[in-house]
Length: 308
Image 1 (cartoon, rainbow, N blue to C red):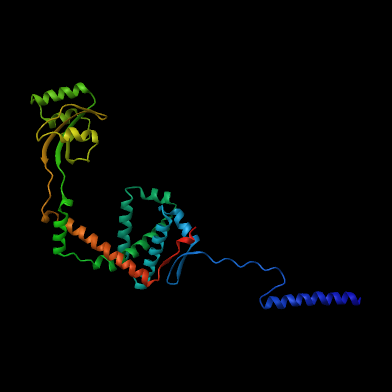
Image 2 (image 1 turned 135 degrees about the horizontal axis):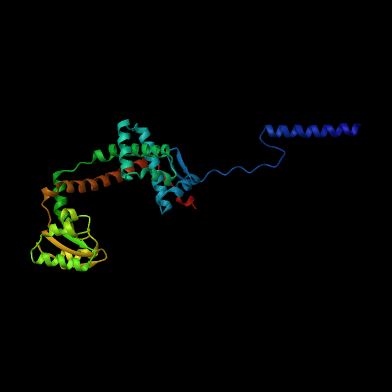
């Protein structure tokens, strides 16, 4: 009896010791290893991007290089933090217009198809659009609105890059397209004898979409039409008809109504294009400077070696 009582005291004292040790942060059972801290791939201010967060985004993104995606992902987050700090937002009218423009960019009836393929809900897509609009407004305030283009800058740019504005040689052409070679030869005979006008023959015989317009292809330059049509058209003189040209589309007869030779337009004619070119160059420089300022301000750091 004495022995059993002593054994019970030993067991109870053992449990008491365990409770005491547990109270001061230890225990009598084997300790579990501490959870590993998340691996960080980017840091800016008090914010971080973990490796898991990066990999989740990269799997869905259309990027080939992980480093490029990491840079862009972190920068977009920094810009959003800066926008919040600066109180940048948008009006309901701005959002409505922005959403309308985005939907228009997907093409008529293709927006729902895009959502389905992307796996995004409309609410998720709208949240992305809101973030993009906030970032855009911040960039406008810090970049776009600060870029000014002077007349002297435009004149200098045009003087050094006038050939960039060269207008290529263009012709105003017509065609008759038929599926039968004999019909094409008959039409050519009528044209050579001046029995019928090209326009009337195109309207009557051509199976091409522009037949009702007298076969009018409009003003075209090299590269606008399939390669097999370019040579016969651009070899013609003004007012000249071609021979019968056989292509994969059928049998063609072409006519060139007018020709505009290649030229470099004067400054006043391309002034708006010159302004856009100079503005784009200066905006790029200003944007790069602004991004450097942001990175320095937010103590922007990347750890691409943690991706692997």
